[in-house]
Image (cartoon, rainbow, N blue to C red):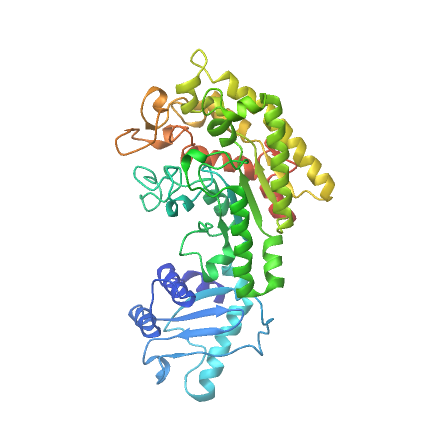
Length: 464
């Protein structure tokens, strides 16, 4: 009966505002304002932390003079001084009573009774979620480039047209991107862009997204986009992030948070399309024949992954390069006889097997399956080869763009825009649509070893 009452009477809007108040973020600005909100709904609000309790009740309820009562339960609920205070918020109807009076010792006993019930049934309504960190390029950037002086940005319509707010967020998508959907699958809040001013307090403990559109494995990739967060800088921000978190929860808890986190890294495509093949006779193409360039890329990527391991990452999802020669931009510029670009597909065919081999070697060296390879080439080719089987009308034409295949230039308010984004495999000239991203994440979660090596994310979640 108690369990049913708890799960039935939680009001999400008040929970969120109360959580905003507790964290010092926007929403409720004062105790009195929160009390007034609770009183309007004729409920009591209990915010449960592993460190202490806050109890808000409408004025007059249980005949108390004080509007709210804060009780330290450290004796009943001991905790390390540097522990992360995990929150649960429960809304209780004012008609629900544990005692007949809230005066004197009866007041305290009633409150303790409610507190103990919440402790006993805490697992019934709170889901633990691991932290989630994201590194890489525009395929996983959730808005860092909004804060930079760069041409690689997605902060104007029609980007975000299918996002819950229907507004652009900096994601290179019509809606959610791959990190958003992985967060959903692991039961976590979306990781905020590291440069977002909202990333503070408790939100830091969810993780962070360091990705930046336009970057590559190599530092000279994406120079045409001006100020972007290249990989060495993403890692510096990760170190800075850890210092900030240590100030909140201490060194030991921070180390545990990082070690137990899930990490996604998506990088490498730009080293081909925005470097080696950016212009005819590019500097890198004159420096290296393609096979040697691929070998060089993989060796540089290995250094990055070892650095990530040194920084504490122990579960890292590494995505391969998708079918670069088959994206609308390359079909428009380099398509061969109406098909995919032979040269770019050759580059992908050389790169992905060497990447997987390198990851296996790293895991063997480290004695653990730290690095998980995602075969995003095959994930894409499934719906590119047979778009109708996945509900798409085409995988060759972008929903938003202009020119052949809608593959030239940026997606803007002046571009062609399809009326139903779920019918297109590609949102713009380079990036999959929200629906296509969901298909990719489903394979990451549940795909066979054809797609995920040595295991998929659902297996990782069970093991960890």
